[in-house]
Image (cartoon, rainbow, N blue to C red; front, side):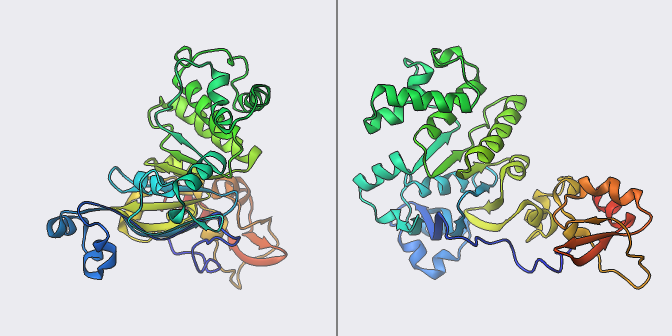
Length: 353
C-alpha cells in the first residue's frame, strides 16, 4: 500500500528533543575506534568486518531523536543491537563514537560524578531482571533511590507510598519481594523507577520473562501510567505487538543498523524494505492504519453528502460507519475534504490486502 498523499515524510520530532542520538557506534574488539573512523570498514557487513578486523559492530551509526513525553520503542530480533543501543544511552555500555545529547548535554562528555548525578536524578531504568533487594520490604525497595539521594525517611516513605498506589500495589508495602508474583515484582521495579520523578524512563525488555497474561497487564499499566504521568520513555523490545501497543514511534534495527523509524502505521502502511514488510506482515492492518492511509480522491461520480470522519480514525473503528452508509464517507480535517472511503477500501483493508 502506498503512503497517503498528505504524508510525504516519516513522522519527525518537532519539539526540542529530550534525547538526540547522532552517529552512534558501539564496536567490540581490538582498536574499535578505527571502524567508525574508516569509511571502508564502516561500510562492511557485520560478518565481513569480523573477518577483516576481528571486531563486532553492535551499533552502527545510529541517528534518532526522542521528543518530550514520547514513548520511543527500539525493537529488533536477538542480536540486532537494540539492548546495546539502550545501554549506550545511559553509558552502562560506553559508546565507541558519536553523540548522545540529553536535554542539551552530551552525556558522553560527562565525568563519573556528573554521570552518577544524571542516573540518580534525570533518568531511571527498568530491566527484565527486577533487581529488587530481597531483604527489604516493598516500600523500602521503592524508596531506595530516594534514600541514596539522602531524603529523610518520612519524606521518602511518603513518596514511595504515592507511587506504590499509582502502580496498583497498595496493601503490599510491608511484603518482601519473594512474597510477590513476577508481575507484582515488576510493578515494584516500575514504582522504584518512578519514585525519583525522572525526566526519562528506560525499559530494557522488562516484561519478556513474564507469562503472557501478566505481560499484557503490565503493557496496559505502562500505557495507563504514561497517560497519567506523561513521562518520556525509551522502551526496548523484540515483540512487534508490544512495540505497536506502546510506541508513539518505533525504530527497527537489524545487525546493528537502523532499518526504519516511524509510527506504527508508517511501518505497516509503508515499510522501508522487505525486511520490515516481513516483520509487519501478520499485523492486522485495520487495527493499525488510519483512514488517511486508505482514502482515495473523490471522483465526479461520488455523491458527497455522506458521513464525515477524521483522517486519524483507525480503520477498524470506521468499519460500521462506512458499511452502513450508501454514500462514500468523507475524510475531513478542519473543514477540508482530504478524500473519501467507501466499502471497497474498507473491506480490502480489513481483509489485509
